[in-house]
Length: 347
Ligand SMILES: O=C(O)c1ccc[n+]([C@@H]2O[C@H](COP(=O)([O-])O)[C@@H](O)[C@H]2O)c1
Ligand SMILES: Cc1cc2nc[nH]c2cc1C
Image 1 (cartoon, rainbow, N blue to C red):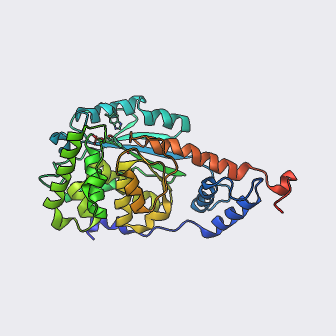
Image 2 (cartoon, rainbow, N blue to C red):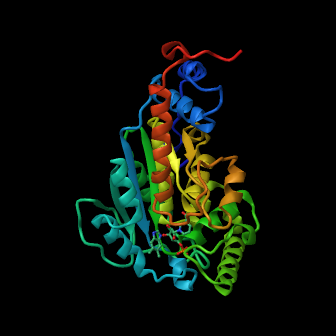
Image 3 (cartoon, rainbow, N blue to C red):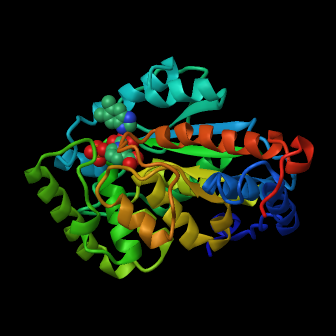
């Protein structure tokens, strides 16, 4: 691997088995029929392993929303104009976007990261300005980005991670469901018709056009689509590359990651293909309404926490689902045991 990418291969420690065993025992002693808190029990046990602490908490939550424009969007694959990417970045900095509202309730450490938009964005304390270019190139005719651009985007994403109780990576980029569908089709060798969806809400004709462009791109780049980094370079976006870098770096610093919707899942799939050690640190927040997300989750063997028919992106589904993790951890550490409460155990 190229020297500037060596960090991607750095080993990732596994969550602590001993603490998970102790947490499993504690779950069996809490005042409830065994297993009755369902997946909330597994979440608490996993977090005990993440934090090497029998009483894990969700206090420090880092939310980073990476935004970038896509060359493919000029082909008319979205229901919205490309100018919306930069406009939404302004909305993130002013706190008016869905992910901002949800992050505030959670008291999360929130920042937007401009990875490269067609339109200027005003400086703001809640905005990291890291543009790589004004947009990626149109991947239906050329590589979406140069190798140097991809390396920078991966590193800039990694730079946004910190040791924390949870990392959430969101994205914003008009056209990025086309990029994410192409990535997933290439990575899992799927027929583009099964994985391509309506994104922001395109009509039937635009969906057919979008699918055709992906089919064309997969043929054009065929020879190169043999490893995850080449797939990212040919078909990705700067914000998607930043997510890949952030997911790998988070796992390397033993910070669990809550994956959001369709685009974040494409980034997680690439991160896993690059460094499989990421796997135990990933949790999946929700099944997006984007057609293809269910299939992508299935390919990953991932079981999301929620299905609320959301398809917004921004990290919104993940920030929402973090509330469930917080409650799972509160139950785990604050419920009384049978012995403490004087409640009889099972026959
Ligand atoms: O996260 C998802 O599952 C999701 C599904 C559909 C759309 N989006 C968001 O919508 C934008 C991309 O949609 P589009 O139609 O422009 O490709 C981008 O900003 C995403 O955050 C996100
Ligand atoms: C308004 C709007 C907000 C978004 N947030 C994430 N993707 C988005 C796409 C649009 C169009």
